[in-house]
Length: 374
Image (cartoon, rainbow, N blue to C red; front, side, top):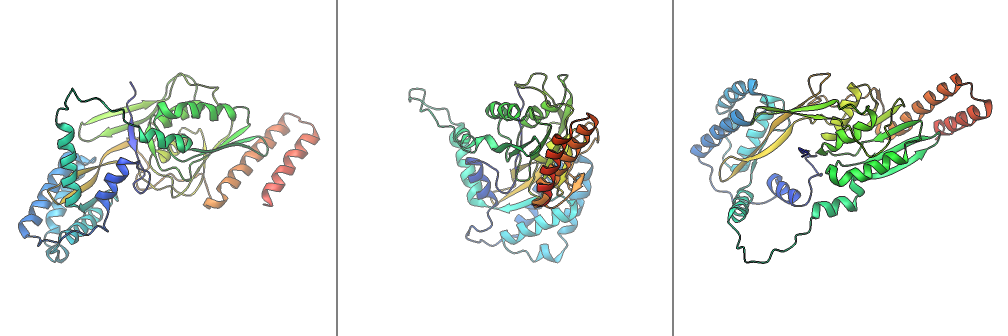
């Protein structure tokens, strides 16, 4: 049975019911009646946050420092002057980010969401009347995934026989696998391949390691590990022995990334780069390697904090905070052109070594010149 790890783009890649829940949780525009914030609640909030960090934060060696720094935060003017719930949430968020240098931390004031979420959980926990007829529920996540072609926006052959795949989300593997196989079959006879992740906001593992399997031999290889703080377990993901198409080996592969490439998209690019399976082109990516969770603090507050981190078998670390750094840095608008030209150059050099006749080389040079002049 596959063990799915979910890595989403925080801003806009959560789906349907998750969108509704998280946006409700994170929204700062909702207006709540402001009750006076007591010093006792302020103290209780910080103490509970310290407990949650101690039991959930992915870097256990940093917990003591963080919690001592939170005690120091209580002595600052910004904390003392926080008289409303929202202002306290802002002070605590800024304080945690300043202390940890980890942008995943956030404290949110949202009593309405917390109350509604508890009511939903209570309803779901109640045993259902077995005599009631079961209504078939529509899988809206699958419906949406189908509408966006499981994240695959474009698959085509560029000039000079270079494949191009652009996709924007890693859907569940059992949903996306046929589309991945079909896409890779379409580009299987190309001489180089460009994979465009410039707008890819993350998604579900092991879809990333399945696509990566096309670029490795059939022997499973450790692709990435993930350390989960709460269970103190390290889970490993491997490439697949069996795939639904022909492997794409010993050909140039380019991966396009941008500031909008996020989470699982970054994992794919980072892993391929450090396995020396691809050249990364574009901008440094977002730098989001940690998985997060949203946890209730009390009736009024929730905290977002990192609970797990990725470990690459070559680097023994991940891309958190640094992003995936391209081998060839260029603007987002020039990334595809740059990769296309690089691919053409390699193909031309290869053809020269094969003593290919002049007219064929002339044709490739013509494609390259036209591309450079665009």
